[in-house]
Image (cartoon, rainbow, N blue to C red):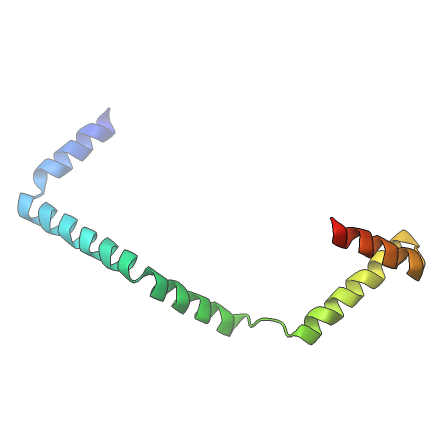
Length: 92
């Protein structure tokens, strides 16, 4: 109860003009952010890619080959069985 009383006392102490101006500024800032959201998202993605660039196709292929080799070692499958398992996985 004391938190709500403190909030009401604080709101009563603020001048109406300052409260109205702050509300208008917040609404304008929110509206501008929503209007330029696609641009801001694109800038954010570009900054992310400068910090952590995408892997090349060769790197992705090498990573997949390593993952497949480790899977073969874990399952102790020969190459024919591994190809069959991959073919079944592609269908599902």
